Length: 276
Image (tube, rainbow, N blue to C red; front, side, top):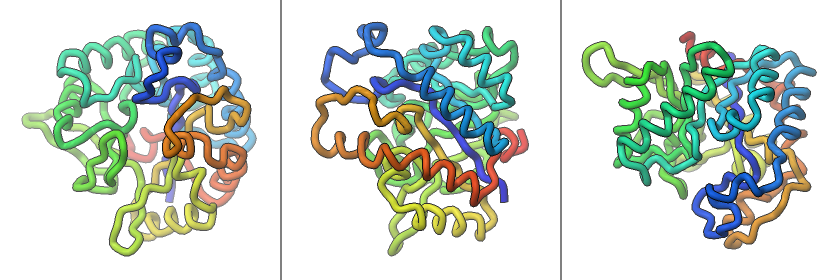
């Protein structure tokens, strides 16, 4: 079974719903830039194992680091979009969402010189009230989305969604592949494990078992990583205790877990796993 490996290219200050005005959108240019160094380190790790991944890149990052986008593409990885301004989908109007998506596509495609076919929204923020966004993604010619989080979570979550890759139909010939974030079942409850704070929090044996369980059912799992998660020296923000724990727990373990995953499982970009 070939699983999907994904990396969301955003920096340490691209954290949602933080009241600190020093890291709001208007001040991003003033924040210390650490995304390039951390992404290059991830590229080194992937190159060592000859593994290719999908990089969901913020348009805002691509605009400022076009050479980084080129390096990712030259290394043979898939380039997809993470939107432009890292805004929660359910806090945008239909037009604002469409404009953000189109801006990111214009920037990234001008650098890669190829059509982008994949999208992931900030914070996995598809909810029952914002499913409309997926139709817009399909209308803009993209082939797949990976925003649905089929469990309850802080920024959205759609626990009624199918937990495995599936096609979504919007009428006529309009359709879109959805590759939801992988979850495992514990006592009948859907538990996320495959990325972010979940990947850092849970012991590796639990993560390995969860992926094997999904694969045994005949489905691929999907892993997601952020460059900041291998950066133990990143600037720390003043966050509520629960969110501080989520964003900074076990940062020192991330690289070892990535290496273990690359040893124990086969991975490829989303487009190859879905065959699109």
